[in-house]
Image (tube, rainbow, N blue to C red):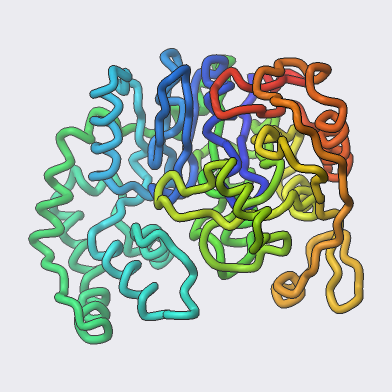
Length: 427
């Protein structure tokens, strides 16, 4: 049976949580393989709405084992707070597995994230201030703290002391902040160990054994392709790999076991934070998409920047990830528009680009070239087959599919779990 990756194909917030949840009852494991609590998934089940930040969406599927993979950075206080909130709502969280190799967000990295962003001023990157970037930097600098270190006080203390030799000086002498206390940091992290220990395992081994048994593993990305540290709009990106390649490195599953890549795209485009965004709308249409689509960050609450669908970045995401199927979400948000523009290419200083420009400067100056498709006025939230959609909505889906580099297999027509039209079975 396959390993399947679910990937954001824009700048995030495409509805990956809903897509994961839609498949969650039909898979055995759901794995978060990158990022931390700097992004969120909103899942609506009946009248219940769940906002998940660090936990995989599979935590809401009764027969599914949720896994936090080695590629994730974990704020343990946030992890326990999310678990407690779900327990209070009657959700069984006992199946959660956490990789022993996942890195831990220490308090000093949250402090560094916040003061560095303030220091950058107009050059800020728009981070969430949750310590994600500094923790990944520690990982690459080989001074990071891993989950397994919490079970060996001697190693934990050595690592904290090593990290703070430099970071304490930076916080105190550059940013005029009190240097963190080694004993306090160690004591805080050790306080989590007893509760954490039963959840911790060799998740790479666990997942490969599951595939050997013929079980299905779903790999769920945080963030999205255009926020990938290598393939995104650098430097306005996250600090991890949010592509299908990252699904392998962040979970311990080898590439040959990845059989399907599902790309999630909105029927329009949004992003949070700084950076170029060719189809962004600073007008009443942008406000309309934000209001009707409830485009506010699940984790931060920040209003999202909104724009029309960008087929150029969809094609790029399809190529980078090897997308086999797209899930087109939030088609219902476009209801009531007389016409719906779709970006089919860019104009950069008079030169047409049908693919992503090679350099960031050109992308920053890209002017969208639009095709204009007729809109529709009918309420589509009750549609469950493609034929039930208004003719213009059908035409929109077909046009977007032809431009985007992979077939559209599911169309979202509302926020709830069952408000979807399945064109092709994903599993």
